[in-house]
Each structure stands twice: as C-alpha cells, then as structure tokens.
Image 1 (cartoon, rainbow, N blue to C red):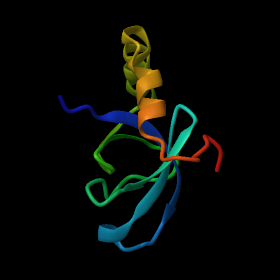
Image 2 (image 1 turned 45 degrees about the horizontal axis):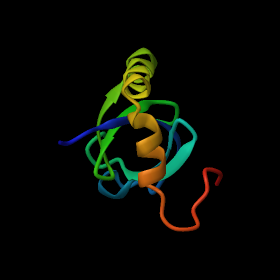
Image 3 (image 1 turned 180 degrees about the vertical axis):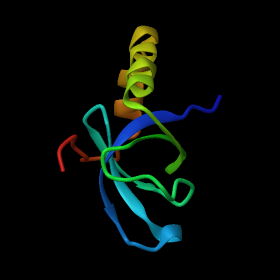
Length: 92
C-alpha cells in the first residue's frame, strides 16, 4: 500500500524548480524532500509527500485531519520510527 504523509515546509534550498529541496517537518520529524512536483510551494505550506517527493499541497486543516487519522489507527509512530536512519534524531 502506498501512503502520502503531510508535512510542513520549513525551508527551501536551490532556486532551480527541478532541483528545489525542502526541509519538511512531519510532526517533529525532519526530512529533506524534493519539491520538483510542487513548483508553487513556499515555506509554510503543507505538502503531501510520497517516497521523498512532495506530490501536492494541502491546507493546514487537511494536514491536521490526516495526522488525526494516522494517530487513530496507530500508524503515526510507525512512520516516525521506521523512516529514521541509524543514529538519527528528531532535531536538526
């Protein structure tokens, strides 16, 4: 099953549309994400991320709703822990 998870863009590097990378927070877990598919996304936007690529933008209400659903089914902790690399922490 494929799952896209919402996250908030905290910063953006590289002005080139194809190579823009966003530092995205997923409920406190920080990741670098390709923003190639969402060229209009800006810092503060919420994006749905699948396999390291932001695939669409969503509003804050929708992002919160998705996090609530994930929390209800218990998947939010799995997402936080399974996506970490050895030795990685939740802080930058």
